[in-house]
Image (cartoon, rainbow, N blue to C red):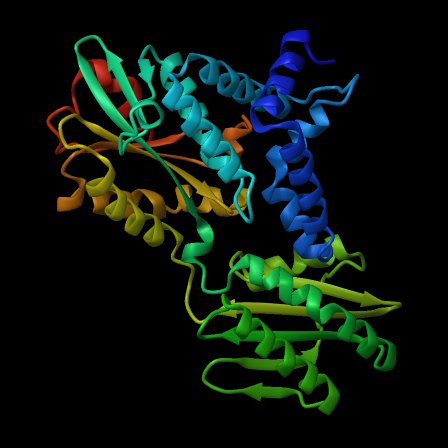
Length: 393
């Protein structure tokens, strides 16, 4: 059961947002989750913070460990709202409302508040010049006789994917009724393999691909290709594939690899699998490096050591682990740190939703984030900064 003080924080948070705004946003999220089974599930995951907060407000709700961590961030937000100067409260309200509008989420604000709490727990005094003075950086850390600026930013893994997951889920939901009808007329097990050299990002590309698949099903053609799309329809022959969808998806993942996009449609005993890949491997870490190079010169003042605290959004457990274990994140970050744009950067840190929700290794990073220190920065070996900048790998 929730502690009374936690319940007060939850209600105070909703009051910061505005009760009517909060209700309207929840209704909007519910409508988004009804868009289709796959896209709807993706929307529930995307807006998990809002949905969990609302669930925790229910009387007699039993709190999970992840919800306990989220409650702490909610409490941090409420306390900071009371401690900020008037201009800071106005900007905080703007951040809240921006996170509850359109396709946005509360992740940027919660990343800011979690980063502040994390640094405070390491012995730093933390100020909010971004909110209170409109500074280009977000946080100012003080410890002993040194200060450091922190920029909090969110980068979507979608920026590095040729075939974006959101587009894939929408396509799979669009095609699903066609496949249901087709399977009823053609019982069996089928595999439609797609190679998309130009990727799948734009709605126009998605609609064109949907039409191509419909035409292929109507004509019973087994191959269709041009410079942008390669389609091949074959019998589904997978050794050891389970009959249930979960077992089948596991086998498909082993067959096609971690970067393939998969969907399964069933009708009676019929099964239709779609498997898609972009024309090249994902470049998520490279997209992150580009963002680092963009924000470092524009958001750090250059008068103090700077820390870039990056939240990597729209990534799952396996992908987040691979980015770290295959040293993709480290390689691109260290390459950035050797460049001119990183001159004022003493460290770069990374976190994902796994760390935000307090999950444990091996999926989440130890110490709540991944850190890379810039050995070329003059403040890199200052002991007072070590808890915030010392490399964690």
